[in-house]
Each structure stands twice: as C-alpha cells, then as structure tokens.
Image (cartoon, rainbow, N blue to C red; front, side, top):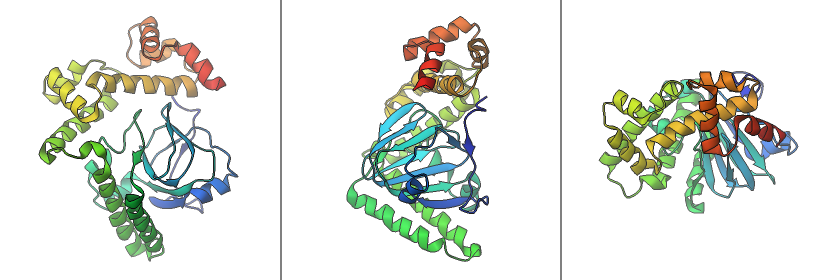
Length: 293
C-alpha cells in the first residue's frame, strides 16, 4: 500500500544519510525555483519554524493557512505538502528517531498531543513575535554547533533540539492554566490511546475496545480525551480510519472491496456507507476528485 507516493529518507546536502539537519526555508524555495513539491512523506520528524510566509500547508488532507511566527510539527509517515505563494522565511529541522534515542530525549516531548501527531490533526502552533525570537536564538546556536567536530556536534545539537521541544510544549495554549499533575495523567492516557489506535485501527473500531485495553471505562476514556483535545475518543478512531482510507484511495490503485477488507469492514458496502457518512462523498468520487485536483 502507498507505493505511489514518495517517501524521503533523511540525508544531508551531499546525499549521505544523517540523523539531524537544519535547512533554510528560503534556500529550499530557491533550489526548487519556487515550484511546489508533490505530496510526500518522510521517515523522520520535521519541525517547520516559520518567520514569514503565505500560502498553505496541507497535512493528511487538511489545509492550514500559513502565517508569520508559527511552527508546524510533522510526524514520520504523514502525507504533507507545503504550498508557499511567496518566498518564505524560516527554518526546517529534520531529525530521526535514532537521534532522539542517542541524545536521551524523552518520548513525551515528541509524542505529546500538542505537538507531533501521527495522522490528521497537525495545526500550526502560533507564537508571538517576541517568543519567536527565542527560537531564532536557538537556530543560530544550531548553525554554530553544526560546525563542530563530530565527536561533540551531536551532543550539542541534541541539547538544542531538546530546548526547542521544551519551549514548544510550553507555548501550547492547551497546556496553560491546568493542573500539571492532571495534565500529565491525561497526556499519558491519551498517548497510550493514540498508540493503540495506530496499532489496531484496522481491527478495532469501537471506543469500548480501546477502553478495555487501557483498563478504563468508555465514559472515562471519552471524557479524558475530550477534556484535553476537544475531540471525542470516537473521533480519533474515525479520523485514523478515514485518513488511511484517503491515503490509499489517492495514492494506490487498490479496489474499494480490497480496501474495505483491509480496514476491517465485513462488507464493501459497509465501508462505502461509512466513508460517505463522514466525508459526504463516495470512495470512488473522492479518488476521482482528489486526483483531478
């Protein structure tokens, strides 16, 4: 599945494999002569630090307007497309899972609901111009330490990436004015819930299925997820199934029947009805329309 969409691995400017790299958005724009890249995915993490930009950023079929002083967080495997209408100013930080492990960066800093998400919801994080200056200071240090001897460079870059992630977490509006212990408890449950969805969305479609795996009631799971994200547990499950369905419909030639069984539906008609209920279009019409667009 997904054989028709390009997946990029992390390489440096010479084409060699790497685990961390910083790129200038304006330079990238110039290198492509302002041409928009096709929708694609990465097998690594990406942070977009936008100082000035106009246009849109499309992530898993959801379009977000570009604006000054904001950050985007892209999880490995997400399909996205950056569409800049003018030359942007900002930076792109790319890093691998191995880089996180090597530098002992806690999973919670990247798996937190407010930052990297595996599918669907990837809205920008707005920050003030004053706060954005803190990110620029870190970027300058990353540029400086990138010139160090390899024996020391990764340790320095790991420490600076950790500061970027900590600062980003602190700027998330949803974390403000909440009891830290309550927030962390909810985040832990939510991270577990999202991990289970990613592992089981093809077989398990009901909130109760996940509540049993988490040893909580369906009501408690729903209330906890809703309190933190504003979305119900059911919506998270539906989003994961729909995103996968859209990816497959757009980027492969799999039939509706094959896709229905792949996603755990007993009958193709059940999948078609499900898809149309939540998208207002049939799978075939979505495929034709999206490809034409």
